[in-house]
Image (tube, rainbow, N blue to C red; front, side, top):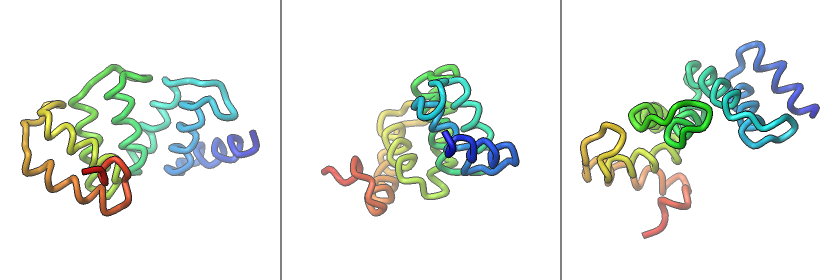
Length: 130
């Protein structure tokens, strides 16, 4: 509970990483009640501050319809923003969308092939499987 209190204090001052961490607490029900809507709201605030992990997390919310409407296009946009910042999970998810042509993206094997090693080189386990 003390950690949540400290995250709230920093989040109230607009600290992006704390907003993101507090969002994780809400999404997992760790130290506070489970609340997907609040998690998405906190991720959005951090994402708007340019925090890559929050852009990825909000993209996942849109992909899964948790706390926000399901929207593959918005998920792809957010994964793209996070991927540009080097977020390995976002690079991997964006690769999957390019391979399948989902999220308003045209199927693009070349872009998928470019993204795959970027995630793998950072140790992202799913990208390291042949």
